[in-house]
Length: 174
View 1: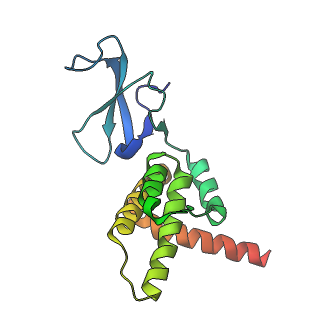
View 2: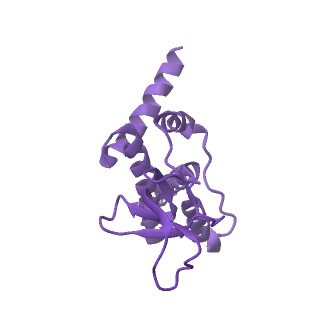
View 3: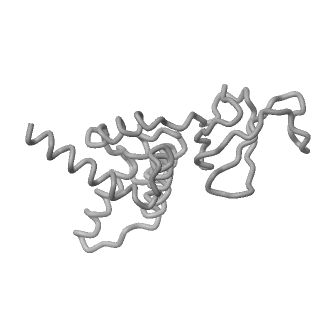
Protein backbone atom coordinates (compact mmCIF):
# COMPACT_ATOMS: atom_id res chain seq x y z
CA UNK A 1 0.00 0.00 0.00
CA UNK A 2 1.18 3.48 -0.81
CA UNK A 3 1.15 6.39 1.61
CA UNK A 4 -0.29 9.89 1.31
CA UNK A 5 2.39 12.26 0.02
CA UNK A 6 4.34 9.55 -1.84
CA UNK A 7 5.25 9.81 -5.50
CA UNK A 8 4.31 6.85 -7.65
CA UNK A 9 4.21 5.86 -11.30
CA UNK A 10 0.66 5.09 -12.36
CA UNK A 11 0.09 3.69 -15.84
CA UNK A 12 0.26 6.30 -18.56
CA UNK A 13 -0.41 9.07 -16.04
CA UNK A 14 3.31 9.02 -15.24
CA UNK A 15 4.60 10.43 -11.98
CA UNK A 16 1.80 11.20 -9.58
CA UNK A 17 1.69 12.48 -6.03
CA UNK A 18 -0.75 10.71 -3.73
CA UNK A 19 -2.84 13.56 -2.40
CA UNK A 20 -5.28 11.49 -0.40
CA UNK A 21 -6.56 8.03 0.39
CA UNK A 22 -10.29 8.25 0.88
CA UNK A 23 -13.79 7.05 0.06
CA UNK A 24 -15.08 8.84 -3.00
CA UNK A 25 -18.35 10.66 -3.17
CA UNK A 26 -18.48 10.49 -6.96
CA UNK A 27 -21.20 9.03 -9.14
CA UNK A 28 -20.25 5.50 -10.20
CA UNK A 29 -17.61 5.00 -7.50
CA UNK A 30 -18.06 2.25 -4.90
CA UNK A 31 -18.56 4.32 -1.73
CA UNK A 32 -17.33 1.43 0.44
CA UNK A 33 -13.92 1.19 -1.27
CA UNK A 34 -10.87 3.27 -0.47
CA UNK A 35 -9.31 5.14 -3.39
CA UNK A 36 -6.00 6.79 -4.02
CA UNK A 37 -6.40 10.37 -5.19
CA UNK A 38 -3.48 11.09 -7.50
CA UNK A 39 -2.22 14.37 -8.91
CA UNK A 40 -0.20 13.70 -12.09
CA UNK A 41 2.82 16.01 -12.22
CA UNK A 42 2.64 16.40 -16.00
CA UNK A 43 -1.00 17.58 -16.09
CA UNK A 44 -1.70 20.40 -13.64
CA UNK A 45 -5.15 20.39 -12.07
CA UNK A 46 -5.95 16.83 -13.18
CA UNK A 47 -6.86 14.08 -10.69
CA UNK A 48 -6.75 10.31 -11.12
CA UNK A 49 -8.48 7.81 -8.85
CA UNK A 50 -7.90 4.12 -8.41
CA UNK A 51 -8.99 1.67 -5.73
CA UNK A 52 -6.46 0.83 -3.03
CA UNK A 53 -7.33 -2.86 -3.36
CA UNK A 54 -6.92 -3.00 -7.16
CA UNK A 55 -4.44 -5.82 -7.85
CA UNK A 56 -3.47 -5.01 -11.46
CA UNK A 57 -3.18 -1.26 -11.09
CA UNK A 58 0.13 -0.84 -12.96
CA UNK A 59 1.36 1.32 -10.12
CA UNK A 60 4.69 1.38 -8.32
CA UNK A 61 6.82 3.71 -6.25
CA UNK A 62 9.10 6.07 -8.12
CA UNK A 63 12.61 4.64 -8.21
CA UNK A 64 15.33 6.04 -5.99
CA UNK A 65 18.37 7.88 -7.29
CA UNK A 66 20.48 4.79 -6.49
CA UNK A 67 18.10 2.62 -8.55
CA UNK A 68 18.29 5.17 -11.38
CA UNK A 69 22.10 5.01 -11.41
CA UNK A 70 21.95 1.20 -11.33
CA UNK A 71 19.59 1.30 -14.32
CA UNK A 72 22.00 3.54 -16.24
CA UNK A 73 24.74 0.97 -15.58
CA UNK A 74 22.42 -1.81 -16.76
CA UNK A 75 21.25 -0.17 -20.02
CA UNK A 76 23.92 -1.73 -22.28
CA UNK A 77 22.80 -5.22 -21.20
CA UNK A 78 19.05 -4.62 -21.53
CA UNK A 79 17.76 -6.35 -24.64
CA UNK A 80 15.44 -5.14 -27.31
CA UNK A 81 11.80 -6.13 -27.64
CA UNK A 82 11.34 -9.31 -29.64
CA UNK A 83 8.60 -9.00 -32.24
CA UNK A 84 7.95 -12.31 -33.99
CA UNK A 85 5.02 -11.06 -36.07
CA UNK A 86 4.90 -7.54 -37.53
CA UNK A 87 1.12 -7.48 -37.06
CA UNK A 88 1.68 -7.47 -33.30
CA UNK A 89 4.51 -4.92 -33.16
CA UNK A 90 2.31 -2.15 -31.77
CA UNK A 91 0.77 -4.54 -29.21
CA UNK A 92 4.28 -5.42 -28.03
CA UNK A 93 5.15 -1.75 -27.61
CA UNK A 94 1.86 -1.03 -25.87
CA UNK A 95 2.30 -3.89 -23.38
CA UNK A 96 5.85 -2.83 -22.58
CA UNK A 97 4.86 0.81 -22.15
CA UNK A 98 1.88 0.01 -19.93
CA UNK A 99 3.92 -2.34 -17.74
CA UNK A 100 5.31 0.59 -15.70
CA UNK A 101 8.62 -1.29 -15.90
CA UNK A 102 11.44 1.13 -16.67
CA UNK A 103 13.55 -1.71 -18.12
CA UNK A 104 10.77 -2.34 -20.64
CA UNK A 105 10.81 1.36 -21.51
CA UNK A 106 14.56 1.08 -22.20
CA UNK A 107 13.84 -1.96 -24.40
CA UNK A 108 11.34 0.03 -26.45
CA UNK A 109 13.79 2.91 -26.86
CA UNK A 110 16.66 0.65 -27.88
CA UNK A 111 14.45 -1.31 -30.29
CA UNK A 112 13.07 1.78 -31.97
CA UNK A 113 16.39 3.61 -32.25
CA UNK A 114 17.91 0.57 -33.99
CA UNK A 115 14.83 0.08 -36.17
CA UNK A 116 14.79 3.76 -37.16
CA UNK A 117 18.50 3.73 -38.07
CA UNK A 118 17.90 0.63 -40.19
CA UNK A 119 14.90 2.18 -41.98
CA UNK A 120 16.77 5.42 -42.68
CA UNK A 121 19.77 3.49 -44.09
CA UNK A 122 17.33 1.76 -46.47
CA UNK A 123 15.94 5.11 -47.58
CA UNK A 124 12.66 4.56 -45.75
CA UNK A 125 10.80 6.93 -43.46
CA UNK A 126 10.40 6.39 -39.76
CA UNK A 127 6.94 4.96 -39.16
CA UNK A 128 4.36 7.06 -37.31
CA UNK A 129 3.67 4.22 -34.85
CA UNK A 130 7.37 3.81 -34.10
CA UNK A 131 7.79 7.55 -33.66
CA UNK A 132 4.79 7.76 -31.31
CA UNK A 133 5.92 4.87 -29.09
CA UNK A 134 9.51 6.09 -29.01
CA UNK A 135 8.31 9.47 -27.79
CA UNK A 136 6.05 7.90 -25.14
CA UNK A 137 8.79 5.56 -23.87
CA UNK A 138 11.39 8.34 -23.76
CA UNK A 139 8.92 10.63 -22.01
CA UNK A 140 8.13 8.00 -19.36
CA UNK A 141 11.77 7.05 -18.74
CA UNK A 142 13.27 10.53 -18.94
CA UNK A 143 10.56 12.04 -16.71
CA UNK A 144 11.20 9.56 -13.93
CA UNK A 145 14.98 9.72 -14.17
CA UNK A 146 14.95 13.53 -14.26
CA UNK A 147 12.61 13.64 -11.27
CA UNK A 148 14.79 11.46 -9.04
CA UNK A 149 18.12 12.86 -10.26
CA UNK A 150 17.10 16.53 -10.01
CA UNK A 151 17.64 17.18 -13.72
CA UNK A 152 15.60 18.64 -16.53
CA UNK A 153 13.80 16.01 -18.64
CA UNK A 154 15.23 17.51 -21.84
CA UNK A 155 18.76 16.80 -20.51
CA UNK A 156 18.18 13.10 -19.94
CA UNK A 157 18.74 11.67 -23.44
CA UNK A 158 22.16 13.32 -23.88
CA UNK A 159 23.01 12.64 -20.21
CA UNK A 160 22.32 8.90 -20.59
CA UNK A 161 24.41 8.63 -23.75
CA UNK A 162 27.28 10.54 -22.13
CA UNK A 163 27.05 8.45 -18.95
CA UNK A 164 27.21 5.15 -20.86
CA UNK A 165 30.09 6.32 -23.09
CA UNK A 166 32.07 7.60 -20.10
CA UNK A 167 31.51 4.37 -18.16
CA UNK A 168 32.55 2.31 -21.19
CA UNK A 169 35.72 4.40 -21.56
CA UNK A 170 36.58 3.98 -17.87
CA UNK A 171 36.03 0.20 -18.06
CA UNK A 172 38.17 -0.03 -21.20
CA UNK A 173 41.02 1.78 -19.42
CA UNK A 174 40.81 -0.46 -16.34
